Image: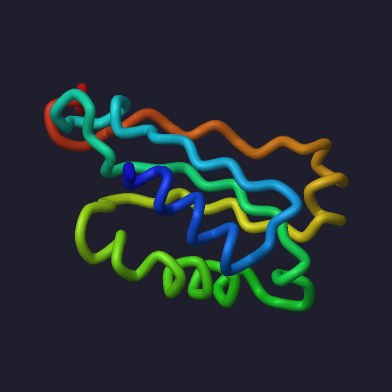
Length: 105
């Protein structure tokens, strides 16, 4: 099972999301081809109701503790309640370009 698939499975089990999108953005960074080290996660769940952003992110980080310890270098999180998701029209911001390593101008 790939890192991306493990992330998707753990988030599904932990948060029972209305929407879960895990995008491998490793290709945008200075890593070897085929890497699974940088991810963008959009997670929409009732579990975030009444929770501050920091609490939401801590909950996701706890669910993905093994991946964050072993293989994931960066995790861009968009954690929303269904109401917030629909108010945004189901959209989240694009990730900025990488400025680190050999990708820096």
